[in-house]
Length: 306
Image 1 (spheres, rainbow, N blue to C red):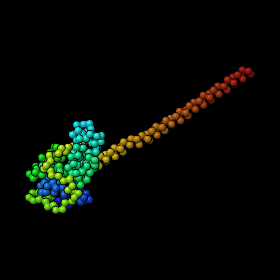
Image 2 (spheres, rainbow, N blue to C red):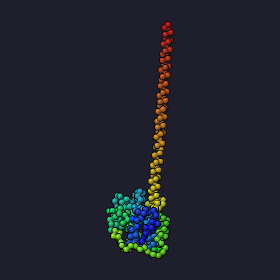
Image 3 (cartoon, rainbow, N blue to C red):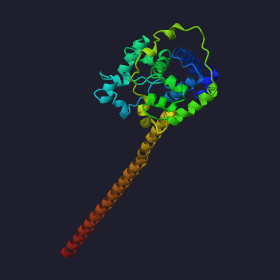
Image 4 (cartoon, helix red, strand yellow):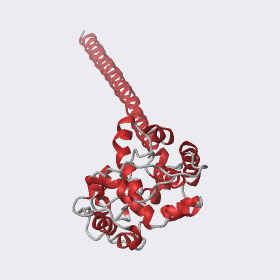
């Protein structure tokens, strides 16, 4: 059985409260879907650690980005996802540690687990069902057998559709193998009592064909961040800081323009006052000159009369 200290070492950034909440559900689905040896557990935990940024994100980070907008009908991607109604892209966005995405997958996994995920999509992000969809996907795609022979590359391709974030996944894989003692043969011992809330809807994966599970967060990883999904939190914080800085920067020129406008207005006012004074003085001079001319003429006329 996976211990709290094991999970803490493998996912050190997962808060204690969440770790203690998730651990019973995690252990139970690992038992149900036979992820029951150190090698299988190490591969499983490594993959979900990368996909969910150490279980801190149970829902796809939503922009929407250009890729996420393609979740909406009409588009080829929306058709593949089974999204037929406006808003289906956001409504059925990726949820769970290995994200189920699209109306079709919500219907498929909901039916397998005996819960209406189409009518209640938020349930796919709750620990009761999020870990079940991840472990069910794992078992149905033959990933236990690949984990037995440590074919981590093929496991990544089946989950991701490619090798996005491979180095980050491998980092978690090596840590998990070391913590769980995967180099030594053995298996986990799980508690005998099974919680009813966890066994409801459990299915026999061998009777099912592998599902179509288009990647959610991984499909938009490059648009979200130049690094892995593990950096999603810090990336969002950086985006917020950059936006705040940009907003401040955009306001600065406005503040600088205020005194400039005042100065210009003041200059115009001074110039107008100066011009007015000059005009008054000029007008006064003209009046004085006219008066002097009038007086001179009167004096000349008076002399002639004498």
